[in-house]
Length: 286
Image (tube, rainbow, N blue to C red; front, side, top):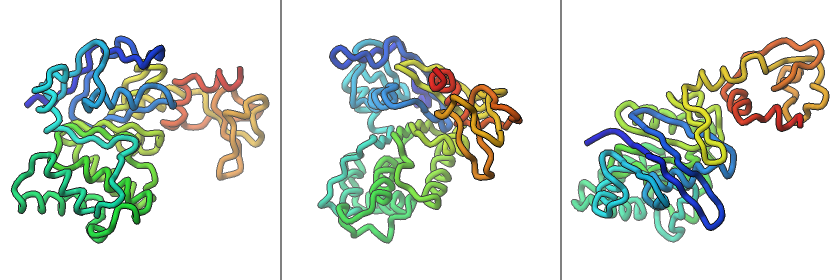
């Protein structure tokens, strides 16, 4: 089996709205973070990769399967795990019942093997103690962790996670980071997030989307370097840059863009580089 995902010149429209046109990329084993503002096309791209949307043109190959052909699409679905932005969990199911149902859909037919797989994924996300609970009674963070568990069923070789850390407390985020980091050692993990600290802590590769295009492809360190010479610390906020200047925990003002009077340079973060890539300082000051 090929551990490779290729997107070749795909286009997608919804009526008059063009999401992307001629988008191409390649994914290999490791954890890749997908960053971008709302409306950039991240969720639509992930749906195309998960085969829930078909591109209007172009080709998507997942682990050697061409998603344009129904038989190969089924083969790809057997090898991938997908957490959509809205997992749509059935509220009247118990946690373990829904996990068992998903395991059946993943063709784990033998009851003992299915039970072991459910035990494994619930332990992975720290939901073993809540296995009998009705989903409607779970907190938002617990539902999110259940969604991740369902995506892990069947030991997928390609894992697609749309905003997986939403609603998780710091302890649970750290636990999920550890799981995804381990999985990324020998399979492909793609996660979309607005949490740049998760990208900095977890991802080996970062893709930044804007208006349906990949505007950056590199490491977290290379993202941060996009803001080199553009991040400042000063005793006063930068005049005219209210959108990109804020008071930090030490009482000084951190500014992305032009230096305010008396400023000293600061080490840029992934968030700084990401905002610089999007042109935020120029747009905010304009």
